[in-house]
Image (cartoon, rainbow, N blue to C red):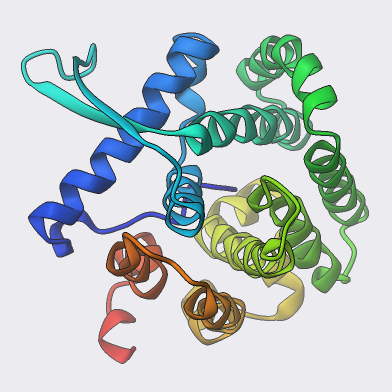
Length: 273
């Protein structure tokens, strides 16, 4: 249910494309070097956005370099990393662990069960290092499981649980900006849950899986206006943050890039923006 906070690269300037790709590659390399080759599969656009956001707010020292990518061996790649790349990689592992558990429980995916077991071995230290973040992801996941297990009509609770799962992850350290980052992430998490529900509507209907849209009486192509509410709340908070770099790039992601998968599946909605 993650991976929607990305960008349409063809709509970026050449400089923005290069910057975004280097941050994304830096996260991918970090996962490989600190956790392992298989853990690179956990990579998500959401955590690349988190690196951009925290880096713009706190201006950490960055390191860049070129490398040969095993996926694209014929051309060299550039990576950029800083202390928030490490943090985003750690949060990626925590989120992926709970997502794999959820996929196993919901759909009985044996591969996800194996993957969750492998990630669990990596999570022992993370649970100690990030008790606040771990607690919120665990509680948010448990709340989602309870609503979905009962097939409850309380879809608002499910949507809010998704927001809770992400809210603490955007707060690397407690400071003046913590509350703004929490609220920003909470609204993004709520948007992601609704987007995921819209994208999985047909699949969930065939499998008899829980989907909040069934209880909301909405078709996925009717969800854009509803999804714009939490996203709009997130945008307003974003615009108040004293960001110093990559602002145009992040605006593209929040104001347009997040919709690319929705428009691809439901063509015609983009023209009605």
